[in-house]
Image (tube, rainbow, N blue to C red; front, side):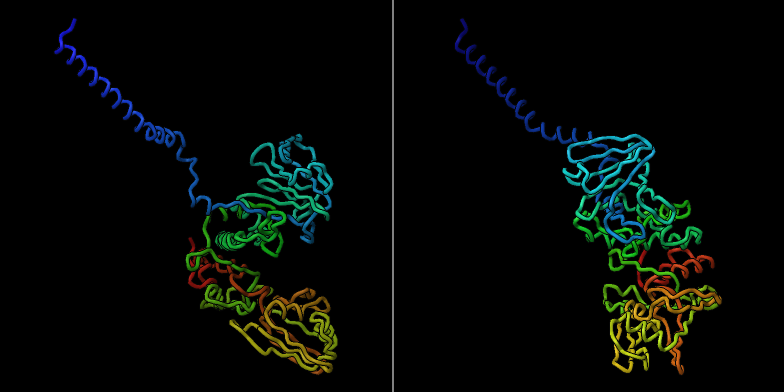
Length: 436
C-alpha cells in the first residue's frame, strides 16, 4: 500500500497530465479552422481566381441576330451546323449531332417546351454556321454559343460571346479591312467603347439580348473576320475612350466635310457628352478628306420634285414649295432647323436626322466630289449643306457623309496615311478623352 504522501503525489501527477491533455485538445480545436482556411487557399490556383478587373475588361455580350438584310427580329426557322458537330441543351435534356449534320429548329419544335435551347460546338473554339441566314459574305459563322427562343412569330437567335471576340466581327463590318492599321485600331477602340455603353442596358429583355447586329447599334459579322482587323482588336485589347472616369459612346460615321459637330445635332448636348465637340479635321495642308468622293456633293432638284419629297417625308401638305431655308445652325455649321414654306402651308423640321430624312429620296441624283453620280437615298448624305433657290429649281450643296458626330472613319484613315498614331487620331476627334 502507498502512503498518504505517495497517494497525494500520484494524484497531483494525474491532474497535471489531464490538464496538459485538455490544453492540447483545446489548442488543436482553436487552430483547426486556420489550418483549413490555409488549405482551401492553397487548393485554389491563383490563375483560376477571376478578378473584378478581368470581368469588366472582357464581359459577355448577348447579340440578337436579325434576319436577312437585318429586317426582322425573329426567323421562321433556324438551321445550324459546326465542323465537329453540335451540343444541344434543352432544360435538363442534352443531345449531340455529328459534324456536317444540320440542326433545324422551328417555333413549334418540342425542345422549346423546356424553355430556351442552347447550342454550342462539340469542339470549343469552333464557329457555328447559320445556314438559314445570309450576310455580306454568305452564310455567316459565329464564335461563342447560340441561344434560341421560340415566339409566336418565329425563332429569336441570340449569339453569346466575349466582348473581344464580338469586336472581331464588328471592326471589318464597320470599316474596310484594307484601311491603315492605325485607323483600324481607332475603329476597334471606338467600337469597344460604344459597346460597353450599350451593354449596360437590355434592348431585348424578352430574349435576354443587350443589342442587335444592325446599324441600330453596330453592324456585326456582315463581313468576314480578317487578319488585319483581328490584329487591331488584339493590339488595343481592353482599351476604351474614357471621359470623367467612364467609357463613352464613341459615335463615328463615314466622311467629314472638314468639320464635325456636337450633340446639339440630336438635341441632346450636355456636360456628360462634352467630349463630342465640333472640331476641324485638317492640318496646315488643308482638310484631310479633301480628295475623297463624299467630301463635297451637290443636288439639283425641280421645285415640283422637292415639294413632293418634303410633303411625303414630313407628312405635311405644304403644296408647291415657295421657299426652303436653314433657320438654325450648330457647331461646324451643321443645319439644326429648316423651314419649308409652300402655297398651302409650312413645316419646320429640327435635328440632323429628321432634316436629312425630310430631304431624302431616290428621285434625284447626287454629284460627288470626284465627278461621279449616285442616286439619292433615304437620307440626305449629311446635314452640312446650303440651299440656293433659282427660278424653278433648288440646288443643295453639301459635304460629308453621315451624322457628323465623333470620328470620321475616312478622316481617321487619311490621318493614319500621314503618320498619325491611333491615340493622336482619337484625341483629335474626341475632346478631353483618355485611352485606357
